Length: 356
Image (cartoon, rainbow, N blue to C red):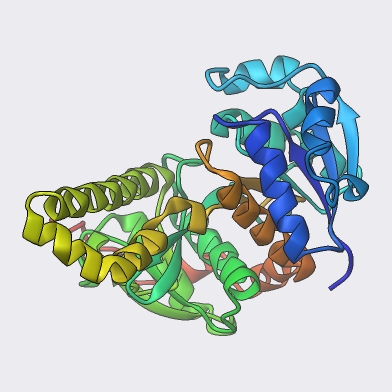
């Protein structure tokens, strides 16, 4: 793998910039050839870098006293955020100085700036936000997670291509399974756009994917498919529900173990297994949402990530850049039938059936 340069928004995130620099230091141990362009307040960052002697030689610090606040609207970011730490990190990708940009800051602002600066790649109508989620079988990815509230069949088919390319580069699966999130697995269930997208994917038989049809919400964490495709509204609700359920599960188990002396003893006997469960469900171990479909790579870290979580996002960025994710997406797009051609002369789509 050639040397990777990563542009980092040092000021984005609930625990920035301390968490950002600490995460970079962790990643530097695993990827000693990686270089960093670090954008943010120079006086603050120099003090943090002084605490990590092994990291300092790999960092090119670029000063800016402007940053995007967590409550800034995307329109505000576009008007005055180009020279912020977030905007400059994305611009470094545009200018060819960096292979990928990472920020734990405002998601809406990051998406708006990334689309404005990098533009959408040819063949993609709308970029999508993708993120890994823990499952019974290991890890799957879900997209879109909020970038597009409403999507047509062509959008969903493009998401499937981008998601499968991501899994091939980041998770190392040569032929990922792909499913469309739906209210049932039967062919007549769901909206017209979902069933039309299924027809597109069935005909794209030259793609390196295994399209398995529809999957219901309970199939996400069961690991029924490597790539789960849906619109941004549904995907965002599903992700937040999964995260809330994982947090609830951990709290309920902890409460149960503290309820009596015998349960405390049980915890001591099963502590190793319980810690393994917590690690598997910890969002920091699955961190690194990615905006796919742009002429450049941008990674969105969880705003509340710790240093380990930010290092995980850096690892995701290195995998994508090192395996040329954008080239894979462009090649795969050539093998998707055009929506008009696929549906031309096809049997009329029947009205949507109700969820069972």
